[in-house]
Amino acid sequence: MKIFTVIAVILLIQGCSYYDIEKKDKSEYLEKPGDRISKVVFESGNFIQFNEDGGNYFNLNNCIAGMTIDKNYVVIPINKISKVQTNWGTLSLNEDLYADTAFISQVVLKDGKLYKFRKWTGGGRYYKDSKIIIAGFDTSSRFYQIGIDSISYLDIYKFNSTRACVGDISLIVGAGAAIVLIVAATKRSCPFIYSYDGNRYVFDKEPLGGATASILQRTDLSKLKYLKQSNGKYKLLVTNEVEETQNIDKLKLTYVDHNKGESIFPDIHNNLYLIKNEILPVSVSDENRKDLMPFFKSDDGIFWKSRMPAYVGEIKDKTRNEIFLSFIKPKSSDQCNLIINAGTTLWGSNMIKEMLLLYGSNVDNYYLSINKGGVEYNSMMNFLKKEELYQLKLYAKVNGEWKYKTTINGGGPFKSETRVYPIDISDIEGDTITFKAEPPVGFWTFDYAAVDFCPASHPESFTLDISKAVDDNSKNIESFLTKEDKNYYSMPDTSNYFYTEFDAPLLTEGKERTIFANTTGWYEIHMPKTGMTNITQLLKFVTEPGSIVKYSNNKFIEWINKNNLSYQTK
Image 1 (cartoon, one colour):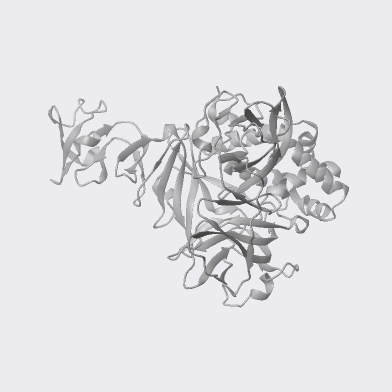
Image 2 (tube, one colour; image 1 turned 180 degrees about the vertical axis):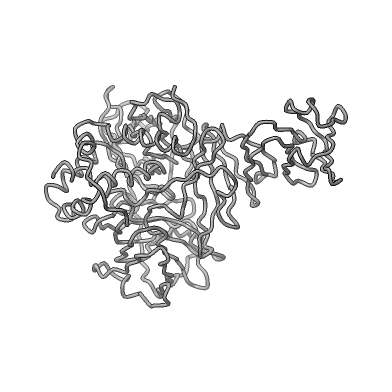
């Protein structure tokens, strides 16, 4: 019984965030009107931010494509073309064209329509074999046409069924001719909080990740980036968009008014820190000494993510990456505050479902054992710390040896929290601090890292109670949300949501305000509960360190094969 209970905690701690994955090899992955490609991120950490029209997806095959003089990207099948004009003259549709002809200046269609291509973007080009590209203008009006082979992931700007703005939702880019979408409609995730920015509700945070049993209920402070005062009110929309029952015990707002240029971050215990001087690393690298600084230099949504070995050509038995972060250390500093944004990958989140399925019809028994607490619960927590799937140990180099300093919590995967981790550095000599983490392959993301060597400062914070809360049935629900009393407001269906309002205090001139959602609760995942328990695999998880990561890798390969994708094995 203890063996199975140990495994269960992995699933319960992070069960908030897993996603069913589906291949989309045409542009219908933009599921709804208004969805658009907002950003492409490359393996190097560089990225292209498209303008408000977004980038577009094209599958080019036996066609001529390019940017026209009226700034439209067109794709014209060969069977519709009568004549082709290049820099070297007019070509008929013969063998001369079937050699990936480039610098096409214009084409004439069989119906007489004429398309002229822009020379400064390279003109039109004939594509004989299938090629997937993303094309569009960036925010500086520069045109890009990008093959997907060099892209790490895409961001899609999406709207949900209430027309609230979901924001940037990441896509994994698969090898070959497929875009792989993490389908929002089938994901398993925490409650979504949308902030009203004065014009619309924008997806801002997903609190309570992993609180999948009543004993795991907790309170999260989640910074609300988009929330703005509107007619004296702060307004939130809270939704259940997945097959779960969301149990919200309390919802308030916590805010801090502070000087411009100062930042406010929580730690893992919801203590708030005022940070005045964020110092970036002088270097960030992985186990291959690859420069990762582009991912860590700002909290901008451009994140490094741990990748599956089979997907990037690494050896299949590898279970850990290594991340090294170095900072300049002032001579007199004995303490620092590490500020870091760490989260869970989309694949790492998907693995929650895969592990839960191993319990078959007995999964409820494991929930019951966890909710009792005691030895089983403690054993599970110890196992989770050992494997570091969703809580990651951080080490510092002290006298040539790696010494444990703190544990970093994951989150997300859509919206991970930037947190402060106070660290004692009194035992570190010299003018450099080097930290190391060993994230399990396929489970972690990092977006930002900095340190502040100033003494810890805890700002005065204030709490706002709900002034109005109405659910999708127009029912007033304030009484469920005003205090932590286990009198839950529950949302069992994906059609459930509620709106809240808070009275917005006046802001002193010259000050800035940082606002957090102060959310308490837990949720229950809806899932099939059939079949036999896979005892053999569960035993292997416990007895063979790293076997969960290897199992994840195998599941990743199965998924690739199922979706007819290709991948490198060396």
